[in-house]
Length: 175
Image (cartoon, rainbow, N blue to C red; front, side, top):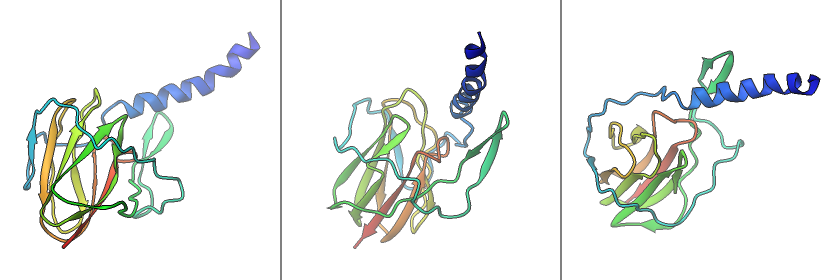
């Protein structure tokens, strides 16, 4: 019986974190804007390459923002990694899967279209955070996609405003 009582507080803390993560506490207008277009292709698409998650040593863009959920502090400021990988062009597919972005960093030529597809059973969105080109998809659900043609050189940081701590990425657009 004493062992059972010792397990309860950590279990309650875990349940509080899970409840906070699943609450969908982000924003999203549900209306596409910018030069992107949502589509309900329904087809599972992805490059097949899986990007690893960023480490805790990746520097944040600014001091972490925090929200309170049941006495817990949840860090909500994304940590953007530098763009990496081969230089791509044409249409580049990005998967939103398991509350992560795969791949989460890209290097593309100007004129490349990037298409994000939601493979999760929860809604996501694509919102530029900084860079030479601004876009916001509004929320989209499993099987739906959002695409944007990137025409201006520079570095774009973007995120899912519903899950900003784990779903953020970087795209370097080159001439």
